[in-house]
Image (cartoon, rainbow, N blue to C red):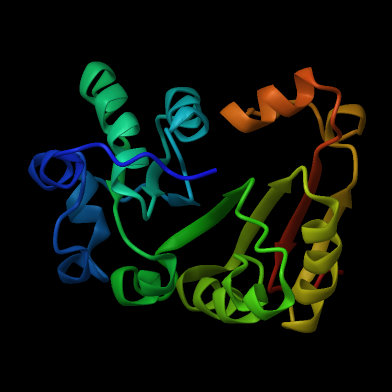
Length: 215
């Protein structure tokens, strides 16, 4: 499906106080952005922000950073944030491959990947957010015991991830091919896509991974 461009989205985002401009200048100094030293959790490919903002409401002791490369999509989240003014939410309009230039070592405690583009063709595998080159970026910004949480409805992408994550030297803490009917369902916050797929009866896959050795 072709993404509809919203005229003026780039300017609106550039002018928003909720979108961090020149983010590289804050590398290693993100507590100054939020005005506190709380842990930072990052959602990559945050879409319209439903998931991220719900977590922010539930967990005021955590700072949330939403990353979205498409300005017309991010604008929807910015508009929501303009209404709610959640103090622990900020946004970036960047390619996730740049994150290691924006966040310093150990500045991120958790990374969420929700319903990422599956890039189904083999020649596009390096664009998948669970591919080795993206995992290398996460490795550079996470705390030593930091985690990556990945949810998808795409079984092929999930199967790929179950192989690519350990191959990159990570440990999978747990995985399930049917999150909503598993022991891990309690406390699950759903995205817009997740609500849609769940209503259609599609099972949701999830894995959580870390770089630390699991005892």
